[in-house]
Image 1: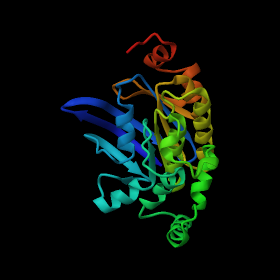
Image 2: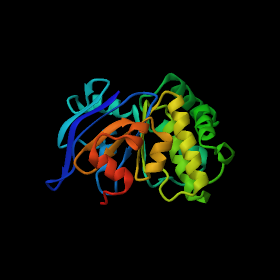
Image 3: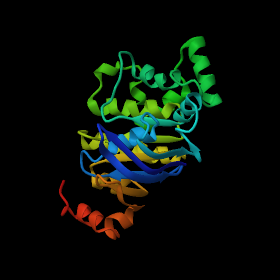
Length: 254
């Protein structure tokens, strides 16, 4: 489990996230919704252990991530994958871009280690790369140059790269922003496939309809922490917090 307890983070003494608490279990999808500028990306970076919160606690399986030494924290960080809003691919084939997710890890399951050894020996495509590309519907583009992909395809490759090293948790920052409906649908199918593999997925999105489609639970972030976190159906149909209700209905405008 990833658990945030009363997390606050400030930039230049200005709070971006205040008193946020959230837990994420393996095999569930948690949506974080809220308007732009309320700290969704900052919260994901804190969960990914890229950013130390100004206050509060981040725990992975009960172990405080900022109470251990740097080597232990790095080991915790390797259990979490993150896909950013903008796909970041380098020159080379689709397969090599996805394979990079295996190469940069120094601690991974034995299956992944064996696959990497096979790459060093004979340079075939590791099975985990093919499987990850299957999930996002791009196996037929293994040998295509990454710079020839559409924006939606590039984002799906970024998703596959994170899946290839078998993270326990996957954090997605606006994963379908500016994508066409087809690519959006394929990303949402990949989210469901990741959950079916037992991966805990967090999706930060401004698209409330997307959160309603893909998430098991939803947290509403409105600038001063979560107003409410609960089952998706409850959040959208019978919220207990008045600010949540107004935000869902469109009455609360930021």
